[in-house]
Image (tube, rainbow, N blue to C red):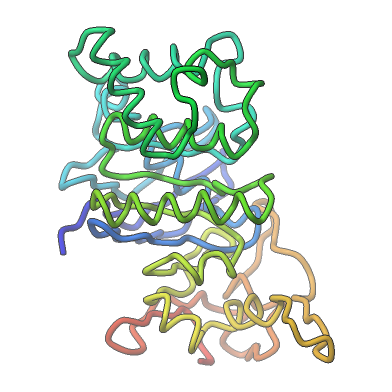
Amino acid sequence: MEKILEIRYLNLFFDKYQALYDVNLILKRGTMHALVGESGCGKSMTAMSVMRLLPKSAVIKSGSVYFRGENLLGYKERQMRELRGNKIALIPQDPMTSLNPLYTVGNQLIESIRAHSNVSERQALRKAKEVMKLVSIPDIDEKLNYYPHEFSGGMKQRIIIAMALACQAELIIADEPTTALDVTIQKQIMDLLDEIKREYGTTILLISHDLALVSNYADTVSVMYSGHIVEEAPARVFFKNPLHPYSVALLNSLPTRNPALKLRTIEGSPPDIQEEISGCKFHPRCDICNPDVCEIESPTLTKRTSNHFSACWVK
């Protein structure tokens, strides 16, 4: 299966503080790869590194980000502008603020299409209607003239996905795409992304902390903790047999339908980027920590089976 995105040994710093540690990810065509973990673990920074939309204080010290075999870290800003929204599309966390409130959604769709393809306004309008139909927006002729505030959160998210479809993006980065949406709308949005993946062979990087959602849609799962990838496996393997103690703790903290089972939590909090922790970053919260090893040296991601990787000294 063709590799669309390959991140190799990515190290990101904010001034003197390190945020990402040797991050490695491979995304293959037509798959949904979930990057999961608690807030602040580095998921969005990984995505923004791919898009080259990092804060000014962030510096990539080493590593590479290959999209279809070309290292994006060597691209000039003009080249990245041509790529963003065209071949790589971002579905941001907050659909409420992702569209310009001063323009109708029709104008924004048409502008996006014409910015990335040499078509007339009439052709762009036709394309805008096509993609709005694909994402199941009703009364298209009427809705084209709506302003963003006239749409619900779920409908705004559909418009953003329509923009990605209009430009035939090969990679969609969905950064918490169901945030602030109710459960019914969450399912509709995820069903839509899954359909796009299967119908068009689009590759999707799903960033989420919702493991229940990930279990239903992802093909592959990577678990991130404090800037490190600590586990990676096919989704069916990961949810059946998690290896890293952080992954086990995350899954154990999921609510169940059995009222007799007490909800289990992970003691403590993820470390702050300025906090210095020797050895494994998870060891202060880990139930199976071996101080002689875990507090001294950081483990590397190691192959445990043919398609299952974990970074743990004990398991």
